[in-house]
Image (tube, rainbow, N blue to C red; front, side):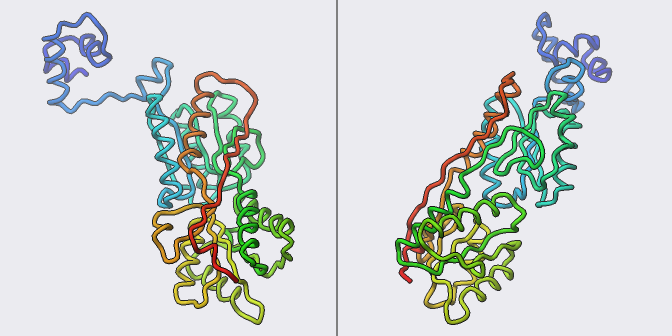
Length: 327
């Protein structure tokens, strides 16, 4: 600011008034100061300014599993739109399903004095957030709940979705219905497995634990699961994929299989309706998931001190063809 004042031929106080949009500065003087700022490349340290004033930093933190996954990209974009409406920016990072990385990111955002946190948890230990929450930083968990603390949470009806998927396949005549999901220690995978078991019971389909395979979804792991499910004298005639990544790997594994089993994927994905056959999915509004969580966070930032809430958003089955294949 000394350099700007010297170049513009004004006092440091005048520079301060211009950069903080304070009144009582002559327009010609303000233009001279702004020209000096541009020439010198001066940038305000907004964080320092806001901390000095005791105001917010104008940011929120967002921790997701993998921003490269279209599911989380859409969720992030929805949260950004809400943040923009409240005059905030979003700092985001990927935990890569690593609880230590989740903690590192969350605490780093807190050290930058974010106004609140949105977290898709990778772990089940969240006591590390209690000091931040007591200090006034609101936290909302998205897609999965916190493991060991009580906090605001926004979820989708995971179990209800797989109950509906099993019922749909059973109505097509399937009795050998398999489920391929993510790691069983992940909340969404465990809940969708629970719904699969419950769906089998409701539909009068015998639950066979050999037809339920949960493991990290890589191309090879899903291909191995498919080979196992379709082998033997009594193969699966239908497969439910536990999330969008599993569905994509599953479709690759089935590309040259004939006859193909019926397929229902959990989570919609781009081009699902253009494949042959189009993919039947259990869909939910990912944008609504992100915006609902962000809206709840900003309610807390703006003073809502009511008890922690659990919001569960609905899902619905979209029949397109792959889930309507007869056994």
